[in-house]
Length: 240
Image (cartoon, rainbow, N blue to C red; front, side, top):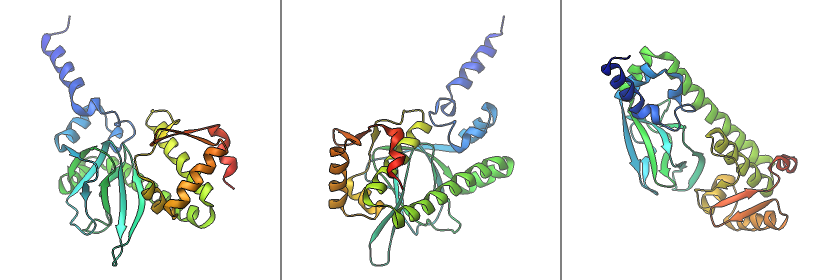
């Protein structure tokens, strides 16, 4: 028979927030075992960002890193004349805030009510000294984002409006599958204006292309935010 104190320690271990985090296995912290992750939990804070509010601003000093637990975030840059260019969308499990300089390189805005895990930059960097594999994991995630940005450049240069939208939908579907949510239907947390900006299209072109995809029975709209991909496995054939 186990001593009561043993049972208590097990309950405490299973109730800490990192053990219950739905994105732990796909986030950078998934590389840590249950005992080590308690040390990471000790230096983390929860932060809620309402829809439309900024997580941080381009040009601000980098003092904090974030991991998305729930919701979604768009990242964008502002040119000197104030024009906005959306460079990506981030989802649960994604890490944001890392920069090769002392200033944030982009703006980050919540597309919906979003829950973040927040880390002080200096404290987390000290944590890396003890757990270098965590830093390596984060760098891998950042490199993946860089590769995605390079793919986006190719997409804008080679794909038609129809192909850009379909590839965009497939990317979201794959992200949902990685989270274990099921890749169909997909939910668009961003407005059409953001999709147009990201894909290098006009809002009118996005709306017209969506109508064409519906008429061709490639997609089915479910309400205003959800899209069902008909015969999803056949969609890559439209991407030449």
